[in-house]
Each structure stands twice: as structure tokens, then as C-alpha cells.
Image 1 (cartoon, rainbow, N blue to C red):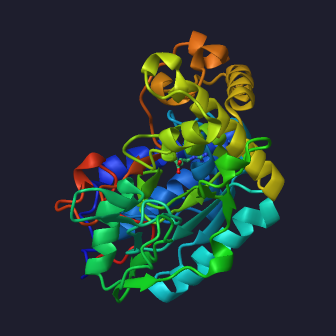
Image 2: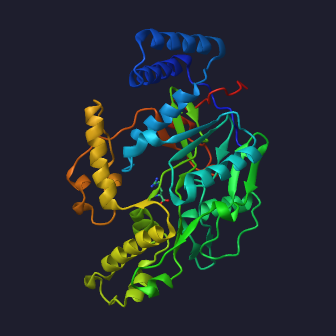
Image 3: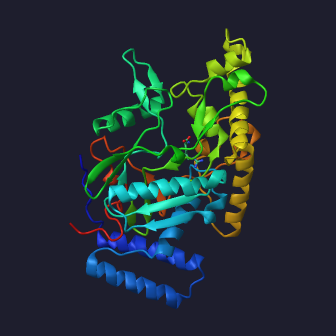
Length: 386
Ligand code: ARG
């Protein structure tokens, strides 16, 4: 199966307007003189007039990616946005090569546990079908229950249709990657040393460790389009590090995910006969303690919701000093555990994201992939006009 790789071109005027807006921001934030800035703008206008598109310089693309992180309204961990390392892989378009670079990305981002924020930008026509590089399979059973991660049932089915034989059928089967590029879609199983996972144990409740819970060390988003200067980069996987709440209060705890709270409550010996004993809440807190403890013990970087929200306030202060407004989605910024104990609870934010930004792609198995989501998603830098 191959999905169209060349989308309609954005109108040159719209492309130029976005290119100019970004290149002005770039020049401003790098202290360029008006002369330098105008020279670059003239170069880009000429290139667009000649070819219908233009190519960002590597430093411009890297800054665009950092600014996209800085402006991500769902992200509470934006303070270190300047530290994002960007790999310019726009020359890489064959799935085999993309996969090799993805494996390097996983190794280098993990960095022996001292996780580094990293983004790899691939060339025209490349798409990753997995929404995150590291995902557990979800197998729907005849009775309707799911073995594995119920969130990934559709992805698992899609990979099966592409030819994946399926895993052993445990709740923790790591999914292969589906990489689309020149030559169609190919499947790649991940080597074990690229899929670092942390077994979850509790510092003083051994029975919690016996539940066999685990999670990946790295969150690597694979299906968001990076938009910079009117150009779109649909294959630009990136990672930061986890906040423990993402794992302990959502991925493992949600009833429609791993639904671990009843098991945790049993391990803690709680009375689950009535909601009013607050067994869910107590189990939730101990599961959060366990995830932090486990990552610390494994030497894998992770933050907690108190540290990250205080850091977010520092980010707001730094942005105010730089004369920039911080936008946010409050419901995403507050943690799902004890939100009112964090400073973000007491603040309000204006929503809306302007490019440079990251935009979710609809899954490739859904028809009519949302080219309409943005007027500038038509073209990658350097894409052949076919
Ligand atoms: N919430 C997602 C997950 O649990 C990851 C989103 C990105 N998170 C991050 N800390 N960069 O897998």
C-alpha cells in the first residue's frame, strides 16, 4: 500500500507570507541586521518565483523546530526548548535508511538514561505510520476485551494488514514500525536494545512489583507534522522525557488503557467494596510513587508534576522577559494527579498555535488524510514537483 506523497502546492502568496513571517522571526531572534534579513528574504522570494518552493537552511529549520516546541500549547515541559537537538535528514527518503536513522535516534535520545530532547527531520514523501515509535500492541479478543494497550488496537490491526505476523500475545508486545517512503511502506521490528523499558516496582510494597507493569523510557512522537515557514515536514519524530503522571495516571491507570488501579489496590490491600474508601485515589498515588522510583532506580530521566509545573512558571517568566506571550491549553498543562497543588492550576492561558508548530496527522488507515488541516501542509522543502 502506498499513499500519495505529493500533495497540492500551497498558493505561492500564502507560502511567501509564511516564509517571510518566519524568516523575520528568525532574524529577530538571532540579532541579524536588517540588511542580512532582507538579503535572505530576497533569496527566498527568488527561489519561490523560480521553483514554487524554497529550502530552509539547516539552522533555520532547527530554530523552527525549537520554536514549535516553545509554542506547543499542550506541553508543560517547554522550558528547555533551546536545548532541542535537530537532525537535518531531509536527504533521507528510503524506508530502510529512515529506519536506520530512527534506531540511532532512539539510542542517542536515550543517551544511557540521561535522555536528550531530539528531533529528526526526514525528506519528502516519508511518513511514519506509528503515532509513537515505541508502542505496545493491542489485540482485541473475541469477547471484546483487549490484551495489551487498547489505545493501539487500530494501529495493531493496520500493521497486521501491512503484513506483520503479530507478536507472542503478551500485554507488552512491542509493535514494529511502519515506514513509508520512496518505494512504498515497509515494516521493521525494533531491535531490543532500542526499546528500553522500565519494570515498575514500589519502594516498599513488593506486591505492586509483582503485577508486572512496565513502560518505555522514551516518548517519541512520530505522527505530527512540523510546519515551519510555510513548509511542512510530516516525518519529524521528536522526543523529550516523561512526566511520571503520563505513565502512572493515564497509560497504566485509565480504564480504557491498562486499567491497573484495581490490581494495585489489591496489592496494597485496600478495601475496594465502595468508591468512598478512595481506594482508586490511594492506588493512583502509590502507582505514581512506583513509576518515579522505578525510573530513578533504572537511571532513566523522568520528571514529576511538581517539578515540571514549577519549571513551567519559570518558562513563563523567561518568555515574559523576552517579550513573548505564552499560550497554553490549561486542561493539558495541569497534571492528572493533585492538580490544585501545582502553580498551573491557579493560572489561565490563551489558546491557539501559530506556525512554527506541530500538527497532528490523522492515522494513515483513515481515508482523506487531513491535508485541509493547514493551508501549508502541501509541500516539503525540496519536494519534487510531480
Ligand atoms: N503522553 C504521551 C505518552 O504517555 C507522551 C506525550 C509526550 N510526552 C512527553 N513527556 N514529551 O506516551
